[in-house]
Image (tube, rainbow, N blue to C red):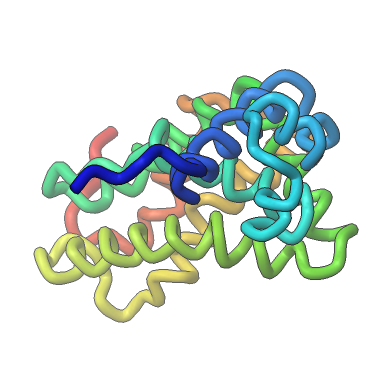
Length: 196
C-alpha cells in the first residue's frame, strides 16, 4: 500500500528551514535570520518553525552549527597533536569570511539574550568539544599527549586565543597565525614533537 502525499515530514521542514537560515545568515548576519524571513524563504510555516525553535537565535545557532559541522570536520590522521592544530587552523580559516561575522554575532547574542549562552553551548560548542575530547583521548592512548592534562583546559587554550582575536580584532586570525598559537599552546602537553 502506498502512502498518499500529504504534509511533508518534519525532517523535510527542518532541512529547508536550516538551509534558508544559513542563506540569510551569510547574506545579512543574525539580524537577517528572523523566523518570518526563514518562513518566507523556506516555505515552512511560522508555527512549524516555532514548534522546533523557540526564537530566531535558536534557529540561527542550529543552522550555523550544522554548516560549520559540515564544512569544518575534524580530521583524524593518527597524529593527534597535529590534528588538533589543524582543527584550530581550519576553523580560523572558515571564520575569515562571513562565518566569522556570524560567530561574533552569536557570541554577542549569548551575552545579551537570556538563555542563548546555554543554547550556543548545547547546540554548537558541546558537540564540537566532545569530538575534540575524543581526539585528545586518542592521542593520550597512543602516548602522544599528556595523560595528566585536562582535555577541556587544553581545548580552551587551543581555541581561545584565535577566538579572542576574532572578537576583538587586535591580532591576526588567519590559518597561519592560528597554527602558531595552537602549536605554542600544545608545547607543554605533547609527548612527541608536533609538526613545524
